[in-house]
Image 1: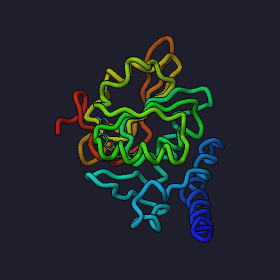
Image 2 (image 1 turned 90 degrees about the vertical axis):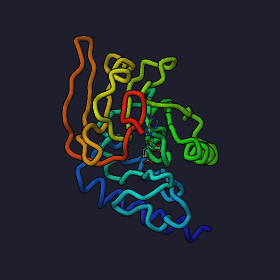
Image 3 (image 1 turned 180 degrees about the vertical axis):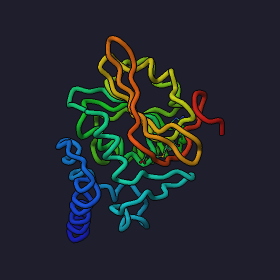
Image 4 (image 1 turned 30 degrees about the vertical axis):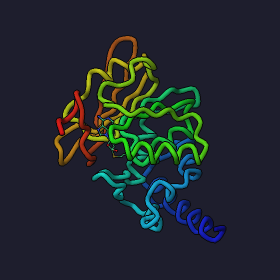
Length: 218
Ligand code: SAH
């Protein structure tokens, strides 16, 4: 399907220019990753033509693949380099995971809905993302055995910052997560150095619920 892949390549370039570069994302590693990852393969066949649009899309089980711009903003906020080990909570479609995997050394990603994880794991294998490690579990407990992490990203909205995750952040580490009510959240960036933990707000956002021991109950 050469014709199709050319079509999607054009749509992808347009997405990067109009939705991401035009809104001020400048990290060259993030832009390069967005030009490489075939976003249309992370949605169902029926939605492929919409995959490069400026909006989230349903991925089943009442979950969504995030809007491209928010993925780029969160990835840039993580300030990733090629040596980083990254923890992601909320694998979902795997698109955000793949973007991180293009930049960082390794991504540990946790999903609590088994059918979503099984489907996405197959896609990672098909696209040969050998630096993605997946786990079926409640991500609000983090991944203690593999901690500390250079970066942590949560792609579902938390009622408050889970201390369990802050504790798994390395000195010099960065964490990005949406925190707020079930209907609207603030994107928070946390930075840890040898003296302490610092928080800043990156603006408003809207995500599905982070459900778990240190998140929302069902
Ligand atoms: N980055 C993903 C976001 C998917 S939506 C994408 O763009 O496709 C958020 C995902 O977080 C959902 O798949 C949901 O099942 C998952 N999730 C919610 N709470 C979780 C938890 N405690 N642990 C792991 N995954 C969780």
